[in-house]
Image 1 (tube, rainbow, N blue to C red):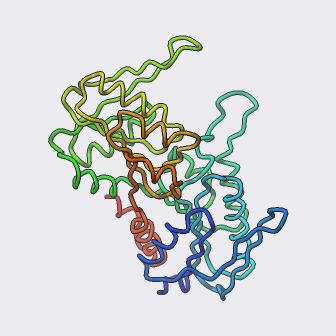
Image 2 (cartoon, rainbow, N blue to C red):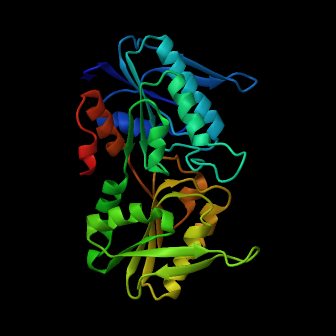
Image 3 (cartoon, rainbow, N blue to C red):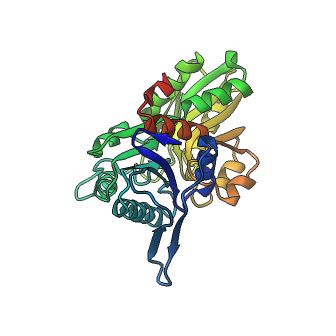
Length: 317
């Protein structure tokens, strides 16, 4: 398979080999032969074991846990490809780590998302492709073309197949996620509710106020990241206390650190659906109410269109 910028090559780091293979299968291309390993002192060594001169190379690597290791892998792979005379290098980062540090929350704090964008760019990347950035303005942190893909078409398809659309209400778990939730609600022609989360006094637990009448509805919480799972569990409890029929959650990136998987498994959530942008740990796979949505076809299609210099945004029209 060849694009307009040379033969297409897919290179995978170690963050999510299953997703990389799924993308390769969708595009009917083999993953390029490459070695990404550690020296005894844990320094990263990369060797591209086939010719990439003049090729259009896509490096598939989420910067998920351990974020620093996977980020360094990505940077070193890009450097190896640049020094091997690849024509164009696209960093495909399904989960962009450090995205939650996209502004200064207080004095003398970093904007780490901008720093990571600088690192990826200066390593020699020509283009970035990612999925459901925590904040859309992070695209502006890059001085190179950046495609922010959306998991919503995959989620909408799954919701249509599994739930009755005439009794669904889409819910944003906080005020900041309203735009994302509204976009999904519009796709399935469903009403929208919002969780207003506030802490009345220091040391007291957060109060969840539901904006909207959810009584009798099957509620679908929509967000980009679930980490500890605490907000999601509390939001589900608040919705059920307001007489919601059942609560599902559709989240793009299942970070699920610490004991999050156990917390979700023991919660009143009917089901948490996450994509495989981050390779799920065994605890996640063992949880009875967590399900994985595959996004290899979505990313694979975007890669194919990018290589052919066709529209990517039309995927989400």
